[in-house]
Each structure stands twice: as C-alpha cells, then as structure tokens.
Figure 1 (cartoon, rainbow, N blue to C red):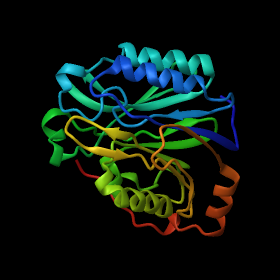
Figure 2 (figure 1 turned 60 degrees about the horizontal axis):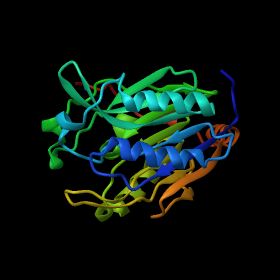
Figure 3 (figure 1 turned 135 degrees about the vertical axis):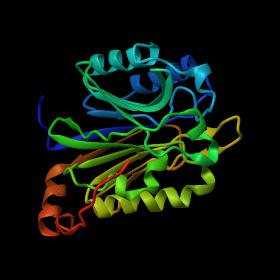
Figure 4 (figure 1 turned 135 degrees about the horizontal axis):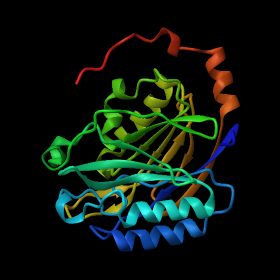
Length: 261
C-alpha cells in the first residue's frame, strides 16, 4: 500500500432519510460522484442508511448485504477508502457498526462501545468490546462513534494513531458540547480529528445541525461544514503533526491504565 504524507479527506454531511437505505444510498452515490479525483478517505455519518432508529430488527443488514457491497464497489472504482456506520445483524445480535472498506475490498469493523442509554440504544444493540486501529497509506486511524466522544479513556492515544474519526448523529441541542469535545480529543491525543455529523431531522423527532469538522492537533478547526448539505474536502499533513509531537510531546507523560470489561 502506498504511503502518503498528506491525506485528503472528504466529509459527507447528508440529510439522512428515515429507515430508507435505498434512498440514502442513492443520495450518497450522487454526492460521491461529484467528488474530484485524488480523495483518500470518504467519511459518512453514523447509521448513514437509516438514521438513529431503535427498530434494529426492521432495518438491519448483514456484512454481505447491499450497503457493504455498495461500499466495496465505490471504493474499488474510485481508489479510496470509505467508511461510516450501519446497523448490522450478526449472531442473533444487532450492532451499530463502523465499517471501513479499503480500495481492494478488505474490511475493518468497529462496534460502538458506548451505547446511548437515554435513547434506549442499550436495549436494542450490543456494545463492542474491541477497538482497532486502522492502517492506511502510512497513517494510523482510530474509529469512534458518536457517544464515544464523551469517554476519553476509550480514545486515549496509547497506540500512536494520527487521526481520530468520530461519526455521529449528534443533536442540534447539544452542538456546543460536540464542538467542545471534538477539540478536546484532538488536543489531549495530539492528533487530527475528523468529526462527521448529519443535518435535518428524524421521526423521533430530533434536529441535527451538522457541524462536521476537521480539527488539527492543537484543537483548531481547519474545516467546518456548518449546516450545509454535501461533501467537504480537507487535506491533513503528517509532517506537521510529527513536528508538533516532537516539539511538544505530552503523550509520553500520560498516566498508565488498564481498561476493564
């Protein structure tokens, strides 16, 4: 796999149709078709095919279903990685699963660890237990999903990752917290953060204002999609990241800990 000092990210901020995977794939296909060549990673929000529904049994797909096959086809045709989460049925359980697809069709998955009890996510889904770090074009990437953002121990940078991706359905009424926590995760982990949210509203009803962002290792937003629908491109630079870590390395002084089940 080729190594790249600069990684071009495309953040996709859609108005997700409620429990309508086919319609959402159609909209996303058209958005992605408009992207220029040279993109390295396309990032879609949490549960991008359905919205944040608790009707898991009605909308869940398998890893050999239509959405994963769609992701594999697009990744292959455009020579980029594509990621986002969808509701997956596996071994009689339902997962809010982050799916990362490489251009060659290889897949890495992460099941959401912190389920949102307030919206009964814990009653409808099974939480994940492992946290992979994705290697891609010379970068190490940590996947996170929405509510994970509130639990910094889970994302503590003990594995030397360069980019954290948090995909979300984060409500408008808590947008100030979204902006604060994404910056905090970038600062404390000395990494880039790509935080991707949706816009519009769903049938619960909950309103979403987007605010998808790319934040640098100093906690500064270098891209903010605000509340616009579409895709937003930003290139991040590993040389700048490494230079900052060498000149101001706080990670080496972090407390040691062990995660328990």
